[in-house]
Length: 393
Image (cartoon, rainbow, N blue to C red; front, side, top):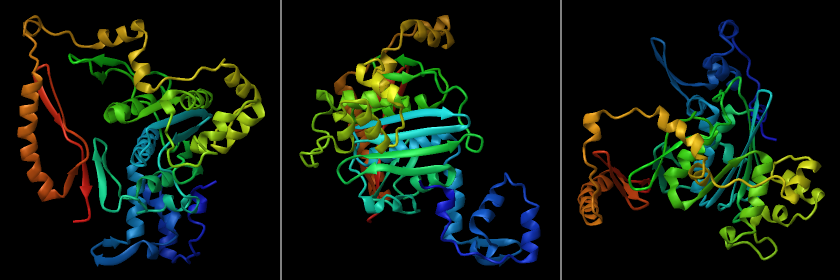
């Protein structure tokens, strides 16, 4: 089990000078500087150069630790970083199991991505470790691919580890968060509402910005390229078994040997009794009782649908609340006719935008990694471009 103490176990003991000890002992235990002093052990390990007048230049490792504490400010931030990590690994199915015991939030993130060789199960939590040597992804949550996401989660979580993973067989991560130190939204059970646009697309509407809404925002951003499932550990186990025994999950692991057709999920899918299911779930980091295992096998615990389908199928009486919260348009605005752009006009507009964006790609080493998307709704034109940042230039 990888935790904060194990991350600093190789730091040699440092003798503190008296002045630093006095300052250290008077710091607020909840402050960032107190945490960093405790983590690193001494000012001498933190400062690269004293510039005078109270200014110092931090060492790279010190700056990384401080940045890591700022990258993850709540549990939902940790969730989105894990989702982006799975996406960058090429996952088409991502499963998020979440439950809470007292003040501890337990997260299990499982995917069918490219997987992690066993020799790197610990290394990936170190700073600047990434597989994206020549590019970094840019999306609505910022840049991704600098090798800091997992390090940032490890710096903020109580425990984080790879439960199971192998090259080409997917990955399973366990994350445990103390919500008294890394907060989360209080309401973690409410599904977000959605609003259907003029073109039939789903937009997120009212609802708490909890783990469910975080996953829904990610799924909407990714579109058809992946399916994201969110639920309790038991629901996620049932969902994994359903996905990979249906046509939906066929061919998800083309590079694995015949004896492991479903990668890390093979034993879970094949489990035919309670003992086998409990063992297979435990190997993936999901702890369930014998009783829960039998309820899954009997079909009493139902699988959940992917988060976007759950939003579409949300009962109308629940969705009606969204309409009640939407501001009512004035009489004058309600008389304005709706304008829809033809496919031909949309194509012409996109060509014009792409011509301008080509200039940006050349100047800033950007590489478009998917087709742009244009929407025109309620008098507003929006064009979404997705780029990889080419760092080889």
